[in-house]
Image (cartoon, rainbow, N blue to C red):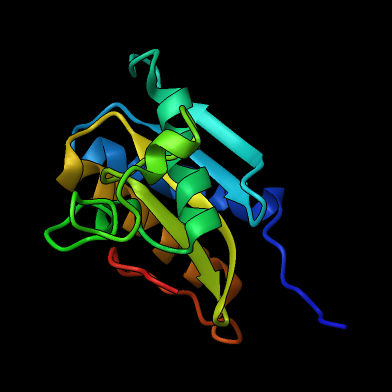
Length: 157
């Protein structure tokens, strides 16, 4: 039997608020989605003026990051598993509309376990990354020193 740590609405709200502040700083209109370890949406917010396609894209990014335990941009980097020579080439075709292999999805890793994912959609790659990292840092600060939260962009568990 294993005891698990779960991300809940309180933590998701903290992450979304921090993400929105970071989005304003980087001048991007973003959709932010937080999912649990099963890829189910806990909370999502689309900023005023953000693209109408943002929610579906943010959900896919968060789902992919949580389910595959890695930042989504790591799939298609040179030598990455979703490139034409990678072991996961075509993986995004297996789950149409749910699997994202581009920047903006990050697993939420607490004390070495993936407890969920965050998906950011609306800015360019640098903007989406800055917003996602800001949300992860806010979670770390909110949880305090008794929890170890990975807060860099390149996450692979």
